[in-house]
Each structure stands twice: as structure tokens, then as C-alpha cells.
Length: 315
Image 1 (cartoon, rainbow, N blue to C red):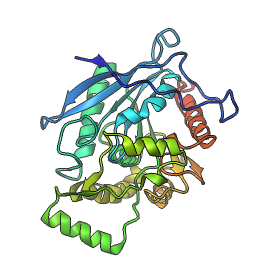
Image 2: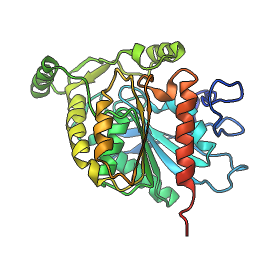
Image 3: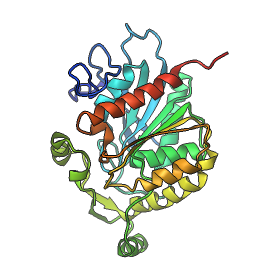
Image 4: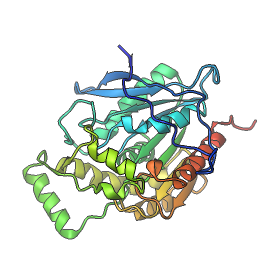
């Protein structure tokens, strides 16, 4: 049974009236998500959140969008992003990836390298069955890797792809790779401390503090999950020329969590007629949560691009 989320709606992050950032679309009133659960084929239940645009402004939604969050976090951190997207007339569905947030599954464990792509496939199929249209796909960080793999492997058709600070390359030293291989061979499910340094998520101190105290943010990672990154990144880079949908990349130039060089390589080999990118040279990893005015610039770039791709094709 679907039910309204009890999470308090966040204020829209994209603002402009006070000059703190470019003005972008936003709903007339806060959008409260509906929570539900979807059972995967292996029996794992994932938490879903679905936001609908204001029916008074959009009697018929302009489209649908699936949102995939990053490593260790959860989709409840994207209320402000969903609010913005609903302001464009999009219905939005996000989910806590397995082992994350309020979803089922062992914490931060991946049974095999493609398990997160397989989950997205099931989420996609259910959404298409319900709404009878191809969705936009937006992924951040690890979610960006999952979304890139999904699109370039042509698992299912999508309307368009948006990648935010995608994990397409990591900063792993030789000793770290050796340790990873040892753990993968001996104890692939063993959880070790998550290497993400919250100081480098955003220049906004409030965002950093909230991340550190969020009870649904995971503090560990396993070798199995890291292996899903290593294999997935290599395959995504190989498959980039196979992209069939329009793509926007929003990349943090001062990213200390993932290596933005991976985004550069992926962009350079993607089909030129399908690719767009915006680089934010001073941005930290979570560009949707950056301090103003950068956050407003990121949302303005996203809004402008989505508006163009929400228009019906010319006759």
C-alpha cells in the first residue's frame, strides 16, 4: 500500500528572487512523496518514493524521471531535486538501492557486480508498465555509474540520461587495489569503514553536518560493492560509444570523492550528437547540494537542458 512519506519536505534548493542564484522552475507548493515498496526477483524489497507534479499546473505530466542515488546515501536526500523536477511537470520516482537507506538487503553488500543495474531494470520496467512511457534517467555518483551502465549497455530504452558527478573513475592507489583484491578473494562481504570524507561533499557546512548525522547514511563498504564500481566503470567506458539517448553530464571540477577525469573520458567517446556537458570547476562532489550561488547555477543548467528535451520533436 502506498503511503505519504513522513519526511518533512525540504525547501526548494534552486532560488533566484534574492539574487543567490539563477531563477529556475519550482512548484507552487511543496510536493510530498508517496512511499511504497517493490520486491525484486530475489525477494529483496526496495523503498520507493514517488513525487507527482501539481495537477493544477500540469493536468497531464510532461514525462517521468527515475532517480538513482549515490553510494552510502538514500533517496530521501533528493527532496529538493524532486521538487525542482516536478516544477517542470515531471513525475519523479527514486528508490533506496539495496543495502542502503530503508531498503532491504545486507548493508553495503553486492552479491555480484551487476546487481544494482539489475535492480534499476526492475524499477524501470515497473515504471514503464505503470506510466506507459519511456523515462528520463538521472543518476548521481554511484547512481550515475549505474545509470551510465544501464544506458550504454542498452538494457532498456530511455528518453534521456543525466549524470551528476558520475563515478566513472576512482582515485585508488596501488596498495588500495591490492587490499581490495585480497578482501574480494577472502571476505567479499566484510564491511570496512567507508572512505568518503564528508568535508569534500559540499562547500555548504549545513549539508556536511546533516550528512554526518543522518542515521540512514551508511558508514561502511564491502569489497563486493567496490568491485561493482571497478568492473562497472571499465565496462561503461568501453560502451560509451553505444549510447543511444541524449545525455547531459553535470561534473564537479574539484571533486575529491570520484575522479572527474572519468567523466571526461566517457564524454569524449560518447556519440557527439547526443552529448552535452557542464563543468563546474570549483564544485565539490554533491553539486545538487553545493553552496549558493553554485547550486543555483547547477539547477539552472539542468532545468534549461530538460526543458529543451521535454519539447515534442519538430514535425
